[in-house]
Length: 171
Image (cartoon, rainbow, N blue to C red; front, side):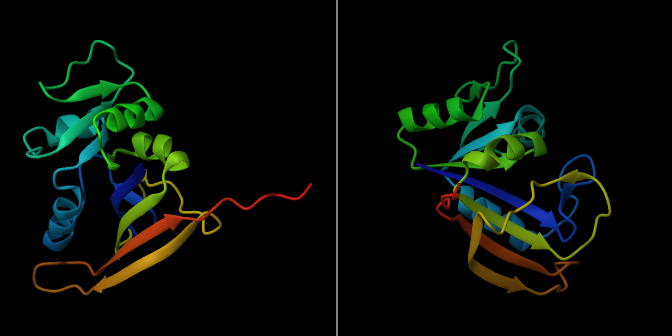
């Protein structure tokens, strides 16, 4: 099973300044919707609550340790990323796509094998960070440049990364 992270990330490494996505980039939104269509999505509780009403053909799995939290019918809560992967596998998913927020990205990054990153050519200066992309672990496999235009205040680059096989360390 593939565990992917999808995110729009500023040039200085941030996904938000506090609440929601800080950019209105229609082509990035379309890219996100196209990639996640019909998919199993792993989201943190806050991100899930911000996205209520957005899920159409998606299968949301909510990462929350709060056993009292009850998602909408048809949605599923798990306390850990490994349990999210197990649930998605049991449901015959081929891929589990992590959509945020920061704590969910951080918890999933060590287990991920694919990153779908929209690098937004803007600097937020501070905010909620995306986990660093370690060049020793990740190799870029796809890059599509998108200039700023009348509908997009910022240029962006659509990037795909695959995890590299872990190299054995010599003692």
